[in-house]
Image (cartoon, rainbow, N blue to C red; front, side, top):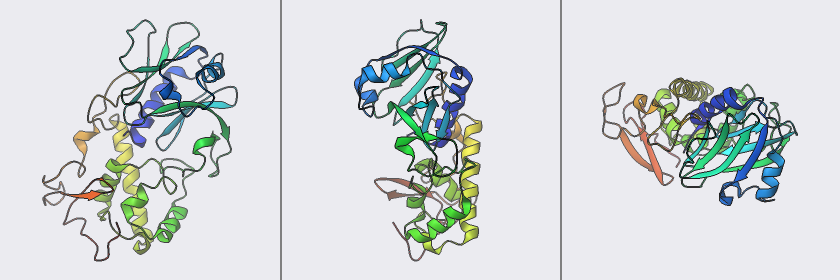
Length: 290
């Protein structure tokens, strides 16, 4: 699933192409793509038509296009969602779900989703409880992400200490810190030299700071190369894949030598997924939390 860097790459692409553009026409080609928009396709397209898009924003894995109506077109890409811009006359993609054409007729925006786990909806913007710009109402409960000015490092440390859970589980908790998924959690923990099952209540302030610094560094590095693509399902707005997967130090590298010490990377089962770490650089704590 696309994580913060991948969604931010898409947001930046949309900012370049659609900010200030007015939606002339919108159509829903598959109702499942707007299943969270409970009022249905006619209401969805009606609330978009004639609206001008303001600068796109993002929190964690969610992205939205603020509209001049005070609402926003919110997107979650799910496992395979793509937001693509291009000339309206190009062939329709096989899994095209929603399309919006702009004034001037020179460009359109398409939501393509093979597995249809992603979704779009038009929703109200509400005040951000973390002090940032207004956010879509359905995601007002999720935490700020570590690349936002609204993120509070000290509050994150205090919350970690109260959780009494495993460190990686805490990093994946969107009510605590948004935007960090399985890939970047493993990469941040490898950089911070901390095991994924480390009890959060045992972390020192310095260790919590190390994890945050590592998470920020790894996500910024991924942004610089367009995110992480393991197949053709994640692409930016021009249909291009990112290649941060070539720079991963731990994730997906089972039995390969640790880039830091040469010890074979181990794979553990974690929440029905995988967790990758170095046995030497990230020793398992005597008291682990899963």
